[in-house]
Length: 483
Image 1 (cartoon, helix red, strand yellow):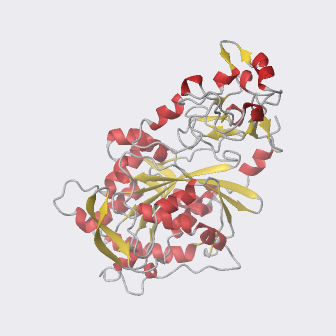
Image 2: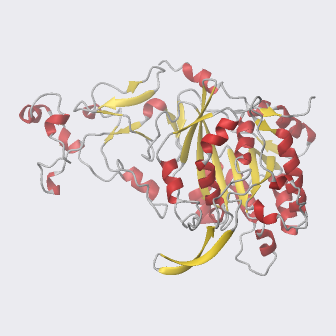
Image 3: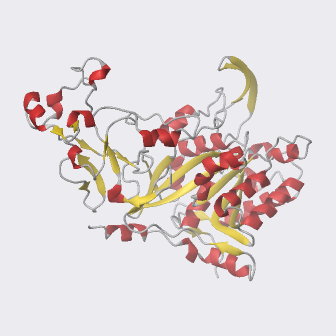
């Protein structure tokens, strides 16, 4: 099977274990905690599902057929969703088809009836929502049931399975995971995949962050020499469902118990392709044991974590409210999600970006100078495109000083240093403008909502992601002191 192309694709990015900064960090720890190594790249032709995280070969995928045959029990047997049988049938008229379409215990028509997909249903039964997908209950084609297809699976010019032709001559490219039957975006698994979990507790601004980051993705990636491509309509849908606009109520955050569908991008540079998968995970889901069982996979399989914290939460945490979720509790839970609570003396090797949101509201803080880098936009070099290490270090020192000036902030710094070997500190504003609070009727009841009073103008919102891309080896680090 011609899969030699995958070696070149997977070899395009720098191996982060060979990154000089990362090696220096490990050497500087001496005989300190043992670092849990990063997960090795998958073998050529293997795919990890972005939903259930099972690993399988590219030629073991299943497909959703595009041909539908209506069950007689549905009423009008002549109505086949507006498409005549003969439009699907390459063998001739319907009478001839009846002679050829009966195999085994079921006729071919029965195999192509629309019906509930138990594997898809079982996966989403764990969550308070279900993926709205038009093909969810369409027939499933597997390579083990030759009755439903013509010939074998089709491969693209690189030897990667991408389609199949069903019994009626209709081609489908709708690949699905063979374990949970969730949809796989076009070309998913063909290039190296990087899972990024974004985590934030209630009111941290995580959902606003993601919406604004996705909205500006083209600009942010162009600034560092990358070409981003949307892999699915879900990205655009996420932005539309979570608007961040002047005089429009800000998104209310992740619905408890719900799973936001993954967000997919392909990044291209110099003919090398990488796939990014973003997950929107509520911090509260990382603390409760039952919730951790449901959402832990999105942390456990992450190649990087962006943790969003509202800086004003630190003063609230020191009150007597026992229901407040501490950032340190979320960090501990994430650590447990990786190591199952058996990681004494170990650190996680994946990059963790700890990012303070709402940085524009910190201008009156005594711990921060009015001239701080926290209040400055990133400056890009049009000649040298990559992650600017010097600008980052200037910011990181000021964020660290701010956090260390508060008990909970200091505890948070100590926790991430204890559990993670590779951490970054950031501050951003997804709005960079004032907000007003009004009461609005939402879901039949009056609720207080916040709305931007001007057109949002994000500041440094892309920096945590750019740092992570540099840790993955997708973009270079620039501005580093000469060794």
